[in-house]
Length: 466
Image 1 (cartoon, rainbow, N blue to C red):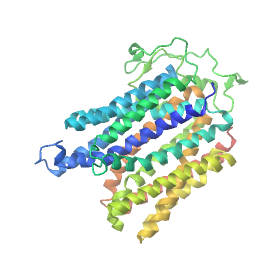
Image 2 (cartoon, rainbow, N blue to C red; image 1 turned 60 degrees about the horizontal axis):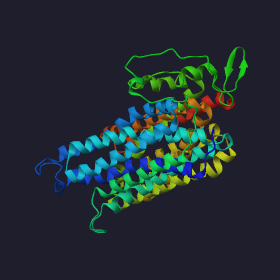
Image 3 (tube, rainbow, N blue to C red; image 1 turned 45 degrees about the vertical axis):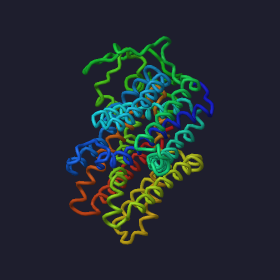
Image 4 (cartoon, rainbow, N blue to C red; image 1 turned 90 degrees about the vertical axis):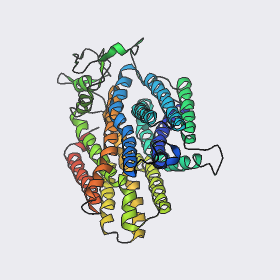
């Protein structure tokens, strides 16, 4: 593993923040762009129902593409090196975001859909930034560096709406319009692209001269027998089976499931197999499943927050904005708390337990919050604890999965996050038809039951893992 300076880590965290800011931008910009006839995306007599449908499709396009792209980019970075894939994906993100701005100037809905699809594909570099930091961070500081992702994620969600609103308001500067935020973001991504070229040293040991060719991409159903001759790390032999140091993984498990370096082809079309392969390693199975259920329950809660506050408590748009600002602020505090104190004094596998239950309990208490002022401490507690949970999961993945498989594990997690981002709000909109509190009852049940599931695993097996 090669040492990395602070500027390298800054660049990686910057890309992570910018990806999240770009995700938030679309929520601020797309709605007025589609609904307001002034922007000529539709004929003026197009009904509002059609416009709302298109908005929903635009929102879904990005996570849909990310669901497929995240594990692909993770696998490719395992095979061909982190830097190469990061540079390509960051440049692709720059161009796709610039294309969004161009589509607004051209009033082209089809071009806007293409730009959102491409942005979702290249946003899979979230996976590679996480895997790269996990590779570069010293073992004794790995928890510290992985916890920062949770904190900077809160920053991205906090500043994104304000930046989009500011840069799209012509009352502030006459040349500001709805395309300006995209131009601004594309410029920052291009700077990040340059930073990567000059500051990032390849953290993985890719094969010398290995090139990324389209001919390396296998059709659906392609399988290649994986070589078991290479030893990935210095290992300790126990009864003829080799064990990865500090990870608790059997050597043969690592070779067959996580290592991409003995494969001559990368199967880009077999996404389900990429996701399911993570489940084959017993030591990561329960934490990974728990992380997926947790993020799904959280997105049912978070994705329905705005309509819930409006319908149940009569929040105005201004107070809704304050609610999101408070949520993002306490998410940031949670990330910093986990970084500065929680993970310094407690192992991630144990530190995660209490926050998992507190997060679910805070969501559950919304059901008996009969006054609007009760919601503020509940939002604060839910976001603070869920940020700690996320930081602990990232740390667990970095500690339990060998370096050669971290692109795959983070790719699979980000694919799950993208799927939850699409399904969570959609299912909440169905649940609310029966009762206003039903989405939050279901979200709380998912979070608490997942906490019980993880606790049982920890008491039975997890506490003994290195």
